[in-house]
Image (cartoon, rainbow, N blue to C red; front, side, top):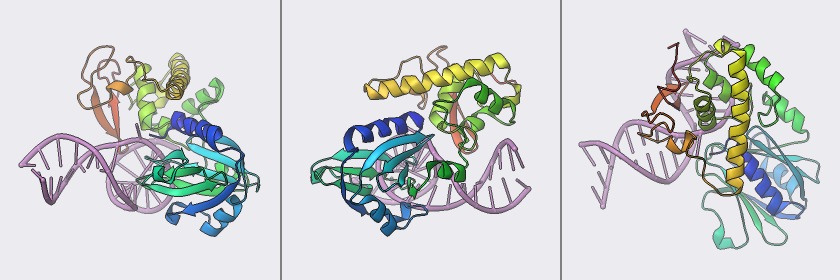
Length: 264
DNA sequence: CGTGGCTCCTGGCGGC
DNA sequence: TGCCGCCAGGAGCCAC
């Protein structure tokens, strides 16, 4: 689930539920999801402290503590945040549980354990170490165009590469390419200026639309690919049966009629 | 530099 | 019903 819009939703959820509350206890059930931080250090920098504000870069969520450290959450494929008050609401697959002194809790829930938690003194250092590209939520057109025109290879792989553009994964790359009528294997260096401009606008619109719908608990428009992105799904524009191909190990859904390829 | 394959982990689903 | 293999929205690592 967690690509940029989901992580942004988690960020707002954390803001709404857990800011400025003193952390009483941190229960680390699965220390193996900690990355470059010891369990004791994590507890030490969190307990008796408060989360003051949050930020997001790509699929990473950063929570700033009044111990002057940043708690960093990455949600992998199945991670999410769950805020609750009664113990019987504790999610079964919680990996880390933060209990505040008002006895409410914030759990990092993640069945598949692909999520990661770390700690840093400087957010920018972390982004640099991870070599993350610019966040696609607030990237400007010029930067976007420069990135696309200075690369080679399949456009879908580029969109999903966090070192190049941070925030897009398998689902939303499919959506963007569908709306822009671009075959996922199209080499980026063959996409012209006009099409890059269109892609940029579509990318912004997709991310914003998904985020708005998530916040209001509303379904995505039927004209989007995602509601039809299932086995035997059909293109909402042409009613053609959608196709799937494997690109770099990931399943890409696309409409063979709307997203024709001159390559492959 | 770009890509494909393998890996981590667990649950759900379709097929037999 | 039971078991098995395959698949899943992420990403790091290695080989070519």
